[in-house]
Picture 1: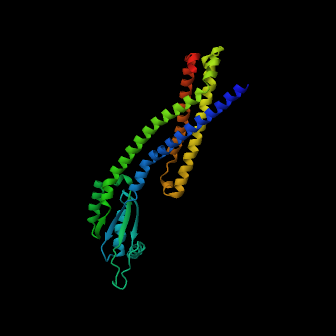
Picture 2: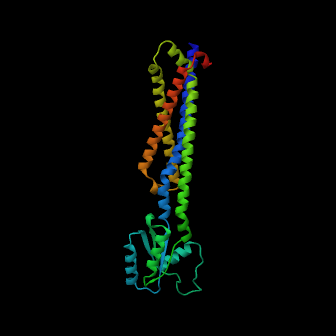
Length: 289
C-alpha cells in the first residue's frame, strides 16, 4: 500500500512537471507567434506614420489653398491630412523647444502647409517620387518633403525583421518539440513498471494506452490554456505601456494563435506519451531497471 502511494505521488509530480514544462515552451512559442502575426501589421503601421509635407507659397488666398487641399484630399493614396496654418506652424515650432523670433522678426516666416500620411500600399520610393513630382507641378506649391532615407530603408528593414522572426519561430518550434517530447518521456519513465505489469497480467495494448493518452490530452489542454492566458496577460500589459498596440491588434489571428497553441500542446503531448507507452510495452522486464 505504501509503495502504491509513493507511485501515485511520483506520478502526480511527474504530471505536474510535464504540464509546467509544456506550458513554458508553449508560452515562448506564443510570444514569438504574437510577434510574427503582427509583423505585417506593425510594418503597415510604421509606413502609415510617415508624413509628407507640402509647403505653400505666401501669400496665398483662402480660395486657392482650399482648392489645393481638395485636390490632394481626392487622391487615392491619402490616409489622413491636415492643413497647417502659419499660426499652427508657429505653435508646433515653439512646442519643439525652439526659441521665439519675436523681437527679431515682425512677421511669421513659417509657411502654410498641407501635411498628410499615405496608405501603406503607396509608401515606396518610386510611388513617392511620382507623388512629389505631381504636387510640385501645382502652382501654389513651393516644396514637397518627406524622410527619403527612412522610406528607402523601411521595406528592406521590415523584410529583415520578417525573416528573422520566421527563423526564430522555426528554431523555437523545433526546440519546443524536442523539449516537450523529453519532458513527457521523463514523466512516463516513472510509470514504466505499472505499464509493464498491466501487460503481464493480460491487459490489451489499447486498454493500457487509453488512460495515458487521455491524461496526455488533458495535460496538453491544461498547458495550452495556461500558456494562452499568460500570453494574453503579457499582450494586455504591453498595450497598457504602449496604447498604440491596440490599433494594430488583429483579434482573428490572435484567436488562431491561441487555438494553435492549444492543439500543439495536445498533439505533441499525446504523440510523446503514446510512443513512450509503446516503447515500454516492447521492452523486456529486465530492461526497465
